[in-house]
Image (cartoon, rainbow, N blue to C red):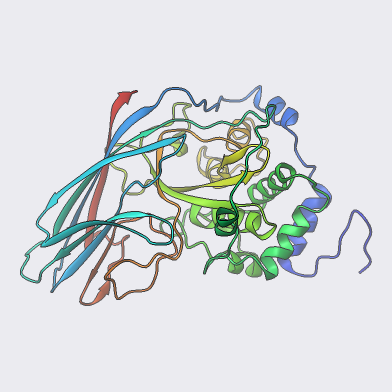
Length: 379
């Protein structure tokens, strides 16, 4: 095979996909996105008023045999888009404590139930304020990260390496891009066009990005797709992080797949992403939700992100997100205190453990939980 400036040599499956994208897909600019969205539905998050919510998680452990532990994520983020307020809990636990993950500060409620407790039950209610996010790309605001934070948000994790095929892919996708904004835009576009929402994946996926690239299986959910985006950003030195949380309410813009039913949020867990850009600071991103709209918002599986139904979301989630969601934490490789089980790739679901080992949080017959939300109002 020979190569030239427009057709790089790409021997691996993942790299062939990169090359096809580079050769056949123009890099989008903001004006083209605006034009595509002009005849489409509206998706325009704006950081205006705060909204206040109560989130309640209730856990019941069935088939109880012996001592049991339960861990629940507690909102841990305080920022320009979220204020994590007080939490309260009740139940029949023998011991309950609020603690945090040492590496990331992810807060969690830990409950221990002695063997004599007939049906372990725990209820946690947390209050938060949220609001939309949006970036004005026409008004750069230079920002800096201290060296410790720079290292923390560019380091690899167990499921998110930043060398090998991850680094090769990131370099190829961003070849020729000069600024952080240009590099991240290239990665965002490539992830949206290369990955796809796979409804059969359990939960939010696993987030094993090396396996995705090596096998060429780019189907997944938010825990896979946004992890790939974050890992590619980190590989080229752009600080990035997943934000693990849950949808609270329907979308104000009418997109069914971008909202949650507050009366039943058991399957509403969703992670988003942030990148740190020297021209703008921490910026919101969510390529996974673009893929969700493409696959599930209509009866048609839409393959082109410039489709009128998708284009406003494609544009809006590069730099913004809607405040009908809260973030629990940004933690990876989480060791649950007191657990004999393995570390979690991320902590977004209720977790439980008995003498027989870790419960499956997606198995309601043994580990039953309900999650509901109540909007208190605008603040």
